Amino acid sequence: MTLTGNLLIGQRAVPGTEAPIRAIDPATHQPLEPAYPGASAEHVAQACALAWAAFDAYRETSLEQRAHFLDSIAGQIEALGDELIHRAVAETGLPPARIQGERGRTCMQLRTFARVVRAGEWLDVRVDPALPERQPLARPDLRQRQVALGPVAVFGASNFPLAFSVAGGDTVSALAAGCPVVVKAHGAHPGTSELVGHAVALAVKQCGLPEGVFSLLHGSGREVGLGLVNDPRIKAVGFTGSRSGGLALLHAAQARPEPIPVYAEMASINPVFLFEHALQANTDALAQGFVASLTQGAGQFCTNPGLVIARQGPALQRFVEQAGEHVRQAVAQTMLTPGIFSAYEAGVAALAENRNAQTAASGQPAQGPNQCQAQLFVTEARAFLADEALQAEVFGAASLVVTCDSDEQIREVAEHLEGQLTATLHLVDADLASARALLPTLERKAGRILVNGWPTGVEVCDTMVHGGPFPATSDARSTSVGTAAILRFLRPVCYQGFPDALLPQALQQGNPLHLRRLLDGQREA
Ligand code: NAP
Image (tube, rainbow, N blue to C red; front, side):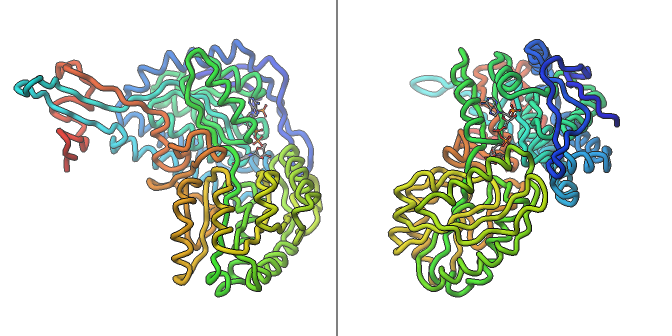
């Protein structure tokens, strides 16, 4: 397919009229063709109007129709073949194997949500039958189901050009819930976005859905992005990116005459707690596993282990030496964008200049533009507790080891942390009591707590929580990865005293969709 640089407003490919975005190959620092002129306020309004016009019809598509649509998107993405891989590699600097893996994950995610839609459990049907004889008051017939919130604005993430971008986790969970989607493409990968956007638009057409179910806009966050968030027809927002970007969208959404939810995934440093006996027993393996997780993908994962917390002593000293050795061998890797590279350099410089932190090791120097040199720093718990700057996210392969003098101080450090996507515990049986004492704190701080693993690598499944208290996300009650992500874009409606003929199918007396209902307080088999 020839890239056009156009916007996709429903089924129409339209040239933008505002300042153009041009991808830069971060490996060569060269601009890539074509240019993507930005959407105007009029284009934003057109996409939102189409999405609104599509909403009522789309949210009442049958479970099978909607599931088939999600399966079709996966098929269309696969049909793009190597062109998608080549373009995504050029726009992100990520290796082809990573992009191929991400394409697989994206299509698996779409098919997983197709399964979820077909099963219909997400409708969460509840029925309280009428009790006309009840004293002192009769009870009317009451029924509840979940309905879609409305059109959703999705911001493509820079660090997952497929799995969290145009047809990624936010888009698929919104579409699964019955919400039309308008995507604001990330300026770092507009060509990848155009290819995937075209695949989604083809699936919309093939499935005979209203065209407004999906649109794709290019342009700046402050104009196109805020334009979407402020449009009254948009009813929710999905975002992954910086703390400042997420907060700007959150504030805009709350300042609307009708405030709307923003599901923003922002900053997390993902503390790793190395308990004393585990550290003594497995020092070298832990150092190796930690640095592998830290440097994977140039550290550009939201679950990257940016903080290690442990009791000081010979085992921790050895861990730092061993981890330092692995860091020194780590080859510099190209980062996603020149902007992300500069932010990494600034974050690392701030730590290097902070008199409370010492540089323990630096990775292999850069051999080309925008390459991330891995870094390991060490600080003491007292300094960490006194200096907020030490827990700022440095997006990339940099981490800070915090040395503590007691379990109590470890708990103090944990209490001091901001909200996190993950918290990791490394332990053996002899550490269970220490770990148990820390758990209540970690449950308040993190969305996912893992034992004897590493936080990078987020499974797409029914139990996953990729969320957490602020600033990990803007809404700790939700997850952006896994099938529970659909819940973000639903709300309950209660139908009281309805004749059967007027009820939506999911709630009808004969249960034609064969759903497992909560009937008069009992879950049906
Ligand atoms: P970003 O700067 O937050 O941009 C993400 C999206 O939000 C872009 O579409 C951007 O539009 C838009 N945006 C940003 N600020 C905005 C504002 N004030 N108003 C309206 N829209 C706004 O994130 P990024 O480009 O991916 O990377 C920058 C930094 O974000 C990284 O260095 C890293 O610190 C952090 N990051 C964190 C994660 C994570 O998972 N924790 C992931 C990726 C990035 P534009 O097109 O105008 O840029």
